[in-house]
Image (cartoon, rainbow, N blue to C red; front, top):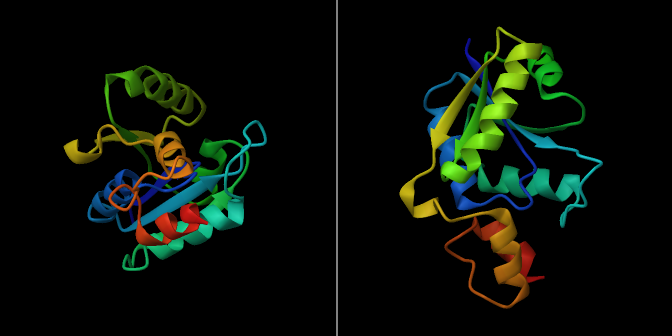
Length: 155
């Protein structure tokens, strides 16, 4: 069984994230969407809220599991017998950081591959930070995030 992990803060999940998750679920037997508990960041939404929003956005996926984790991604991947780490790339600006992270993970866990998904062109500009800012200023985010997320951000 091929198991992939798609890690992220998902604060909040966007339609770009959903696109990557759905495409990965077509390639792997199981995709674990792993919401990172990062003590170095102050997220807008709590960990449980981010997990709940992802579960609502991904209700149709049979081979997709949403969990949270803390610690090293490679340790979490080994624990879950994952072969692949999925990462999304929107633009060249994402590549440097993602490339360094992939090489570092490979150094710590040589048997775990990182697979990059190019985002769909219609989401190449989209980031969670932009979504939060647009929502805060009263803008329409209905085409940027799943409906459950848009409702949560409006509150």
